[in-house]
Length: 388
Image (cartoon, rainbow, N blue to C red; front, side, top):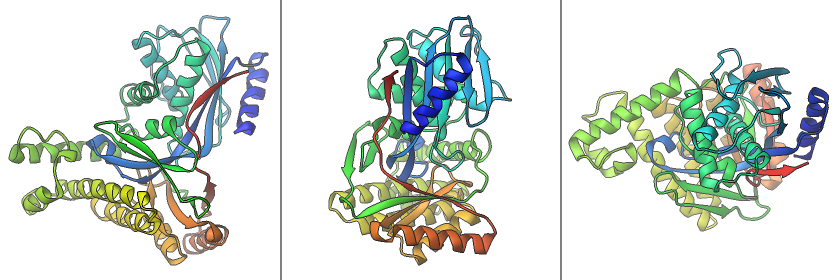
């Protein structure tokens, strides 16, 4: 993390001729269980990881705000009273969206200069976008001497992505970035906001992220289609079960089985995935409370198969990585994040991590010709802000 802060400081000094006043720091996340359950009102398990986005800021001595992204080498500028999405600088929309939501909430925002730096893998399904949103919010709140409860930070950042960016995501990503706890898996009931951090057994297991290097684009297309299909499936059940069914969260597994033969495709498979995935999250949480990491791993493998067959958001590359993970001894493995590319998360015994990463990477390259990116992830603390 310190290295990224230094990178942001140096770039800010080079760009604007002074040190920044404040740094907002927010981690990426891995989704352990709960694929596409959050916007269906369901349950999720996740963990913040030691890959962060840093937003370095200071108040600007000019009328406009300027934001420079070190990873892209590009700069965006905008007036606070005329913020519009830019199809050519989509990355900046995540920053702008947070500013717009802060303004709507009556929070102070003056023109600012900012530099964005980070080491969260982009397009890997570990939510570099949410970490950018949360880091921006943390930086601007600290810069203006304002504060919000953790839940309000997460919700504000989700609204930014839903309403300004146009991505109909749930709260999982922002929650994980804000609430992360070191060496603990997070559980969240997205409806009631009940949440807890459940420690992994000390020193016994670690997480390895393997980026398939396949395409991962979310704002339009498949993600929005799945969101719509889930809403249609919930409406189908509402007509038959009653008005209490607002989302697929409200349909029990037994009710699904009762009506399964009548619900049309593809709504049947989408509903089966979401409803069964909620069951897997609850079982995974209970297993982790018992210290039964092997059972949690079984739920991860089952989750991936459900994503592959019923939600159809996997890819051949992700399926291969999960197959190799099982062959080379991972306790659990599955795609992480929205899917349609990106990465797998692998739960591996500490003593096997190096050998596992090497052998899976080599075999994946041999079979596909693609060199994957392999990251050993430490489970990290959530977002913060510090002053220069």
